[in-house]
Length: 440
Image (cartoon, rainbow, N blue to C red; front, side, top):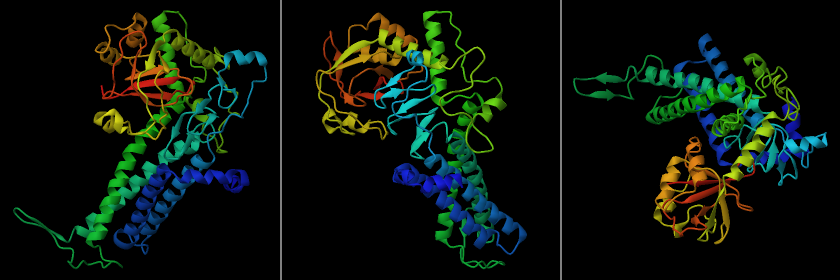
């Protein structure tokens, strides 16, 4: 009831527009096809309602559909929870431990990150999910994870119905020869259903079976990933930050001990931070229970250290060709056109002469750049060796640019044209930018 009352309030009516996106359209279409075909196959061909088993099976199918849609729409419309615009901590001295968001004109509270799709700072942001066209965060993490659990369970039940329907309907119609298999769809069966199981019905059932099996595997894998981070009271972003913290400490040999502050030491306690009987998670999304050896700003201080580390190792590049921001630029060559990454993120135009500061690289990038330049700076080579997880990725700081294909060169070395192996810019959660080299 809380969800329904929140949905119909005037200020939330604009959230309905989230349905007008390819992600929800595809997700709801798959749910509709699998649910409707499972119900039709059960009632008409496999397990009629005049039996006890058929009635129980029918009720289970309806329950799966209702539960899946309930958690799906809650994950979409309840949302992750957003940091208020212009937010500041109660204690002024705490601002030195926090990052400032220029877009929201406020500080980022612990565990929050700015989502460039939602254009807001999100509480305990895990990721932006295109299937719900919203972020997965503090307030909807439980709904989203429940959806990831229920969808494979419901699709597994539907897949069993599809398989049994095809088996029972084709059992008396298939004849095997020495070298042939014949299917007689006109054969008379002992049990006559309301509607004959024709070739179109067989094709529709087979198609629904493919969708159900694919959804079970894909969504089931996502559920496993989510439950792992929940049991450690982390998000996907925080797991990435923790990994970078260990790399930074190992590289600089600082002797620091980084303890992830939000792991409470018990999987049950971590689980209860997300899943509660009320349906709403623990906390207000700003202040969090932390490990006894940590404090509220342990993770934000580490983020600031990583951000400063990126700036220290920056290497300057300059744009040598204009780019108009097209998704598939024909003017940059055939290879660039067909190797454009499959992403809905916007491309931002670049102008010749703009400066790019690259701060991270990989061995593959180093090898690729070595073919273009006589040598790379020592600090770039060192950072490349320590950044294996940034496959084909370099972080950038480019004012006013979010994402773009670009042709670049070292500012103090010879220029080169990068038309086949193009470059890609996009903003990170920390407000920096990343340079991705594709086609290597």
